[in-house]
Length: 287
Image (cartoon, rainbow, N blue to C red; front, side, top):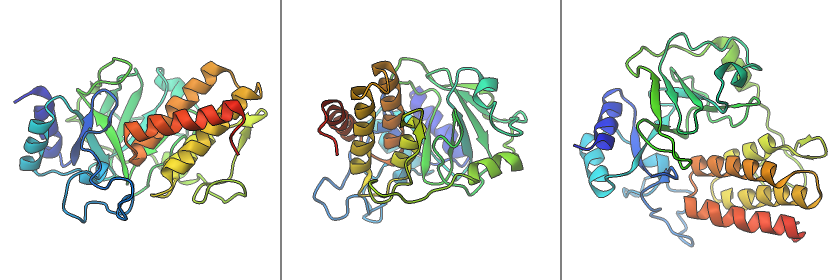
């Protein structure tokens, strides 16, 4: 049994449903069973009985896991969140800095993963909350309808996910103040924004990357490509207007890509959509 399959089996023994990810991009390894033009695309969550629905495929069935990792022996491990645990994703290489704007954010000794980028995944008992992307300056919350990459998977920058503290430590409930902070994220409508996205927010003169990432993460199924294109074009427009540097734009686009992949788009869709939207924004062709 190879190490990835063994780790996937360990995860399902803890009650965590898993599915294979294409290494090192960490998008679903199983191609979508509903190609463009299929009326079930973006609507079917596995009711058709076939594989190819992203994190909706995740299972704790050992025979299915063996079949998947036989077909994709080098696949990374994706775990659907909101079932066995939720995850606080701290997008900073210093934990204290990453959670500095959050209340009462101690891990209480539960499982922690050091990601392939040197960031942190803090595991908690399921809270019933959904995904909240960039609900604080450096943090995402991955609950229902989300997924997380698990050790010993690799990241596209070359690092490996590893347990920072033991996966066998007991899970604890997230502190009430942290749950309240995650829950307080508001969503409102706005003119000029694709349907299904919240109002735009601005940072000093430009579009807030955190706001754009949040819109991509919460876009309705069937609209995610359009919202991703729109968000990438806004970042390109800021570069064209001199409101953002190219390095800042690339960092923001990387965040958009991560949010879009977690939302269920394939890496190819994400790459093509971001490239098209960003080019439209930088050349002034964006709406």
